[in-house]
Amino acid sequence: MEQQKKKSIGREILEWVILIIAAFLIASIIQSQLFALTEVNMTSMMDTLVQGDKLIMSKLAYASNEPQRGDIIIFLRDESVNGVIGRMGIYISDVALKLKGDFRRNRLIKRVIGIPGDKVEIRNNVLYINDEPVTEDYARIDPGLGIVPNGSMDPVVVQKGQLFVLGDNRGQSMDSRNFGVIDMEWVEGKAIFRILPFDKFGKIE
Image 1: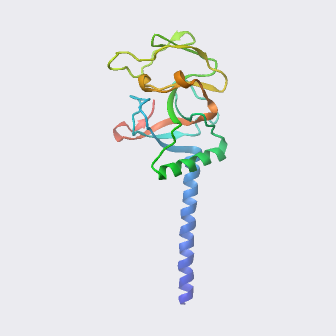
Image 2: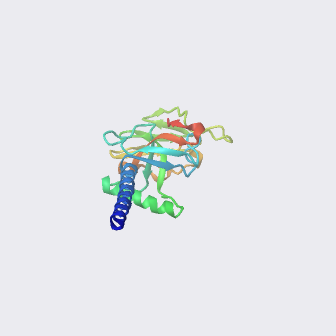
Image 3: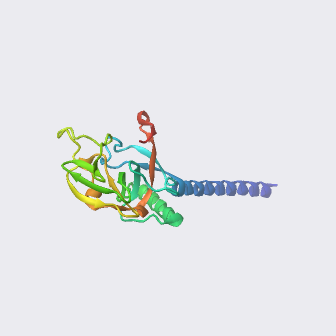
């Protein structure tokens, strides 16, 4: 009787261990392949996004479509996101970094400005796409200058498989003006929803 009771307890412990492992694996697959919780660590997307904002990123957003102008994307600069195995590896690496209180320094959040075929140019702080000036309601006006400090940049034609990206806070953003166009293979996903802070809870525009 006592031996049977021990076996029953042992079986119950084993079942709980299996359930915990299964739950972890399911959560890992969802986090690495479908959706992920990410945090804004820099100021380059103010006032749209600020440091500390917690976002949900859709990793399925570009499964059948390419990024469009105006999308806010998350990408790994100079690092390809290589399919299922690659995304799982990135997730495991992120977990290890988080346990050390650190984060991936090359994960950037920017807005798509130019898509393949676009000619992007900046003249006297004015952004032009295909020779047309762009009105950017989302871009932060520098309180000291009273303008969006875009600067100036010679024309760039975005090639197939590339994107031209900028931060909304142009005066404090390292983006395609500095490091050039990005490769679509670097894109992890699209920022679709803000869950924290609660007073800004909702869809990201």
